[in-house]
Image (cartoon, rainbow, N blue to C red; front, side):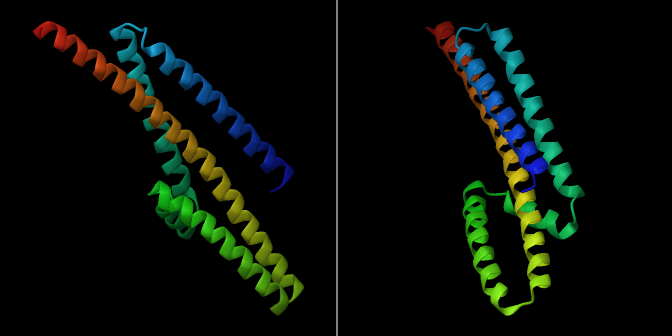
Length: 159
């Protein structure tokens, strides 16, 4: 990964960490929040999650058709995707080492460059996916807190 790309990825990961802390603070404070405030937070969290998901889909869609198909498919199932990503990375590395002995240096350099570019794209997609997943989790927890408030209030009304 180039210094610029590593810096960008590190910055995005730092933003992800900051966002996780903000989400945790909102979730922690939600129990002591009024229903109207919590309802507003739920709506905002849903909008943020939808916006992030749409942006991620749009970005993937702008990539090369082959890459877009592979990445879209790649991220459709979290557990399977992560397994496939790590398995693919190990397999590609082994293939690259086998090719090194069999091919000319120029071909190896091109192959290594393509592999590096693919790995860099996957790293950025993983960070973006994690960010979208965090927003989905924030929404789900806030929505669950709101649903619990409504259920408790309904139980009191019928008691």
